[in-house]
Image 1 (tube, rainbow, N blue to C red):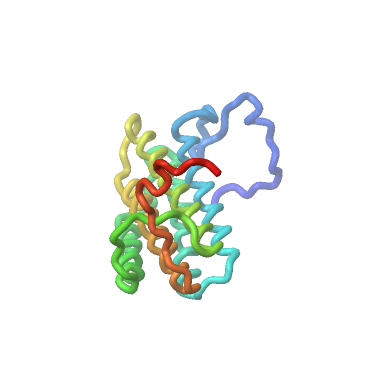
Image 2 (cartoon, one colour; image 1 turned 90 degrees about the horizontal axis):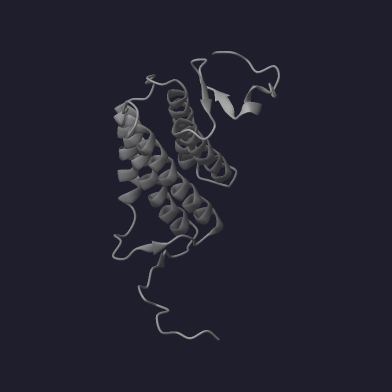
Length: 188
């Protein structure tokens, strides 16, 4: 383990920069810091999801994902560092296949929502997609670490399937999108 934080405020960020894990400073508006922040926000939303009552298997998987997201954030904070691997992506694919196999096939897009816990999971899924976009944008200008992009892409898919599983577990049907539902409907 690296340095321990003994003091939370340092004032070193007062100039609009922040320290990276390799000791270099970066503007807080940089693509790298935006990607780190999006991954951190995603991890926080997973934490909100974990604050709910969950089956033990799903809880364990989400806790593993939080550790993976810290690995990803660490990699992003030290340019060129790669602590993640395609094995983590494969694990998500296996979990995705396992959950998806028990769900009815989708014939329409679904709206975010259903039960409160599924709605929380939908927010995490949407934030995951944003984190993925941020990492892709960073890698348009920096050395690409493919497993980072692969991981976030699979994670958003897994979160989508978990949303459906959570609704089903609580006896609530997915809310199907009805294209054009309100076209031509006048306001009351």
